[in-house]
Length: 256
Image (cartoon, rainbow, N blue to C red; front, side):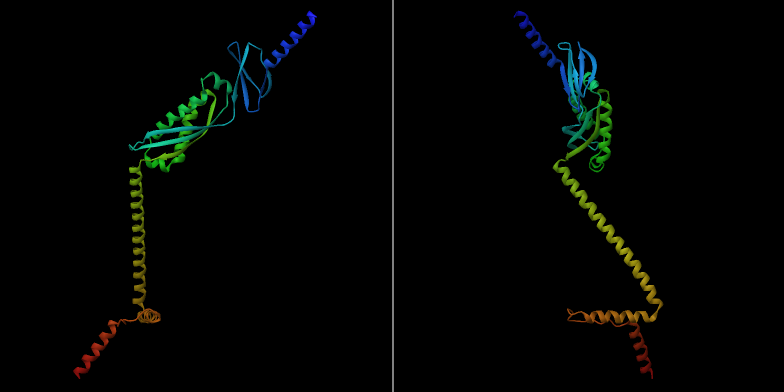
């Protein structure tokens, strides 16, 4: 009986050790294995075994992580204080480096993203921050990715989300935009007047070259005035040339 109990105990212990040594890593996971404190390598995906009480495995997720960068108070190059937040997307490419080279790669990536955001935006003016968002995003991604590369972390995208501007600055920007719209309207109106004057000058040259054209234009204008139903009084312009002709004829009659 004693031998049976011993065998049962051994079997139970073997089963416990077996389940203690078996690990399963999903397709998007890797197990970083340490043996007596020394890095042994990466295991997975799938089934792998550890030596109980000797080996230790740390799971690392290789999927892309969405990192929300908290709002940061930034003073731009033209001394405007803005509040900016961003989002970064990163993933682990080297699981061993992510565990060995840095204590907490997610926290470290978050901190370097915040400091880089303040540093880069402090070198641009407010107009650039509002108008050149794509270039700023690319610059942030490049700098942060260079910092996280030794940790085995790849930062693929960094996007500036919201830019909060003080209310006084918002009013100034609105006034500037209104002044710009008025300037453009005046320029367009001036260009229209200039083009119209050129057209009128050309038309005048054409009419002056053909004596009958002026009389034809006069008749067309009279026809347009007479066709209007809202006119109660019609003023008929009298050609100066006709007055001059009548004056000359009248003087000739009195002389006779």
